[in-house]
Length: 356
Image 1 (spheres, rainbow, N blue to C red):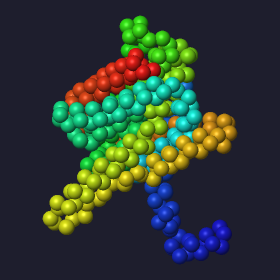
Image 2 (image 1 turned 180 degrees about the vertical axis):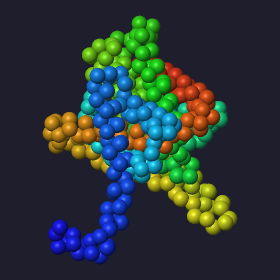
Image 3 (image 1 turned 90 degrees about the vertical axis):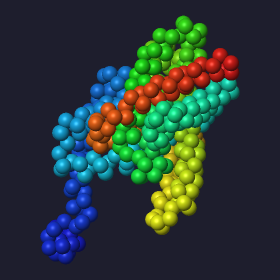
Image 4 (image 1 turned 90 degrees about the horizontal axis):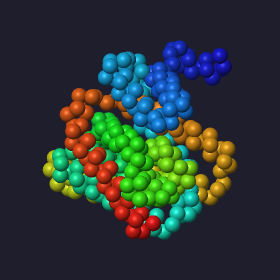
C-alpha cells in the first residue's frame, strides 16, 4: 500500500471512503446491466429485426416482475438508467451529419418536417381527449414523431419529476415497440397499393417508422436503394430532436411558473430545464460530425459504444417497471399509439405524393 493509501486507511479506520462504498454498492448492478447489454447486442447481430434496445427493456421488465431483481443490484441498475441513457443520447449526435440531411430534395425535407410536427402535435392533443395521462401522451408523441426510445428518454427530462415515472416511460417505449414492429412488416407489403417506387418507399419508411433499427429492417425488405434513402430521412427526423425538446422545455417552464404563481403555501415548485445539458451535448456532437473532423474508424467505434450505452440504459429502465400499472393504463396508450402511427404514415404519404 502506498503512503497516501495508508494515510487514508488510517484516517478512516481501515474502512473504505464514502465514495468507494457507493461504488461498491453500485458495482453488482452495473455488471448486470453491462452483461445484459452485451447479450442483447450479440443477439441483435444474428436477428437484425430485433432491436437490442427493445429486447433489453423487455428483459428488464421480466426480471423485475418475475421477482428476480435482488436488492444487491438495484443501486447499480437505478443509477445506470438516466446517466447511461443521457450519455448515449449525447453520442447519438455523432451519427448525424447535417450535410447528409440537406442532400435530400426540398420536398422531402418539407415532408419530414411536416410529419414530425403534425404527428407530435396531434398525438399530444389526442392523448388528452382519450384520457391518456399528460406525460404519457407527451412521451408517445415524441417517440412516434421523432426517433423512438431515445426521443422518449430525452423528452422525459423536461417534464417535472413529480409528473413522470418509469411506468410512463416504459408504456411509451412499449408502444414504440408494438407499432414499430407492425409498421416494419406492413409498410413494405403496401408498396404496390400506395404506388411508390423504391426511392419513395425509402422516404415513406424513414419518415414514419419509429426506431432506427425498425427503419433499417423495413427498408431492407424493399431494396438497397430504399434502405439508403430511408436511413438519411430517419436521420433528418432525429435532427429535430433537440429543437422539439427545447420547445417543450420552454412550455413546461412557463406552466411551472404559472403553477408557482398560483401556489399559496409557499412550497417551492421545481422548474424543468429549458434544454437539458445532455441535449446540448447531442447538438455539439452533431456539429462535430458535420465538420468532418472525426475519422470514420472512430465513428464506427463510437456508434458501437452508443448502442451499448442505450441498450444498457433500457435494461435499467425496464427493471423499474410495474406491469400492474401498465395493465391499468395500457388500453388508452394502445389506442393513442395506433392513432399516432396512422397519422405519421398518412401525413408522410401525402407529402411524398404532393411534395417529394
